[in-house]
Image 1 (cartoon, rainbow, N blue to C red):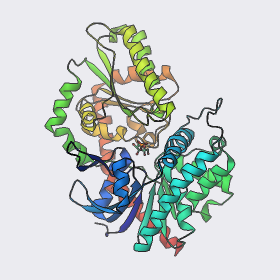
Image 2: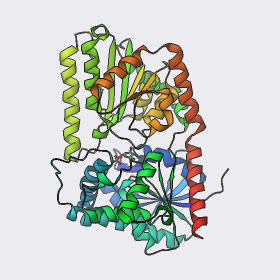
Image 3: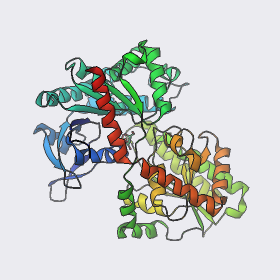
Image 4: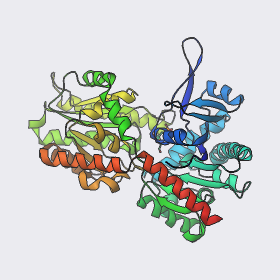
Length: 474
Ligand code: F6P
């Protein structure tokens, strides 16, 4: 067992969200998203102060009273420090810069022809920089309280906070894990050069920077060379290590009665074969092309009509951003179009479920024949690891070559090219026809891979990198 460390974890979304119950009492619920689930074991094994944005009125009020002691699901205690930002600054940071700019550029979604956000200067300065500065102030205060603690920044919301901390606390141990893809210099060229340079410089101020795959790692080294002109050896230790899940947690979840009940609820009249997808309604997840691919398959294989159903569990996401709202509407239109064209009174080709219910996702994981993950780009994609762990039907994973998880799992999946609808129709057809023996052995291999490289191993690897990086600096 590794030694207990003092860690300061910094992420935009916190491990819990606060709201009020029917009596007006403050209640904490588990925060949404893969990142928070993945970082949960840190709290059990180490002394953690977690810094995150206050996202609601309740959280802003809580932030004003200073850090609170919170309790994780397993009873471990940690300090939570919520940072309250001015609402307009947060809007510019999240709704203008972090998601439709950084997320879009890094997932190949940037609209090169129209460039809808030509003038980013104000949103950058008054939103992204202001919010990063508030995070940096909180980190500095925590470091003053505990100068030996190591700082673990997370993701694309916080690219420049490390520089803002480093300038004030040169001795601090700083690391950053980027959970989304990194892209080469040409993709960054769509943004003003000063913004691009500041992003790279911000990350360069860390002792260690990590990504899920070697692809994203080498793109980062290349873009640092292009924009900072710095040799990789002079900068942080840059590593690649794919995040994972806790297999036991998923195996236990799948055995719960409330999960089994949800399976019945999801499939009241189950078709012979189920193609499943579980995603947020994010354009990067590519749900529309997935539906179109299924439509193509039904077009050419009339014998599959009435027998195969596509189930799409899509949690609405980031709907305050116009591009996301428009995409979510288009997802619904496309599903309706396919149902109108091929559906019958007895059979609905595409079932769209927009409930945000984690246990429903686990229920669906148990019961698919084919799991479709056709992301345009994905830092990793945790669904590709979670679902095979609990699937009870020898299900086949159809996986985008552009998902980080592909690098780890490619020997046991049917690959797809995210822009090629015809190729995705072929892949779905192929997956439905794979012999049982092969399906079984692929599923077993994916499970073995996830068990051998689980979340504990990932956390241990991150801390080992931090040790290496701080030794190199000493
Ligand atoms: O790395 C991407 C990520 O941060 C995931 O951890 C998470 O599922 C998703 O984005 C959530 O995004 P948001 O906080 O904008 O809802």
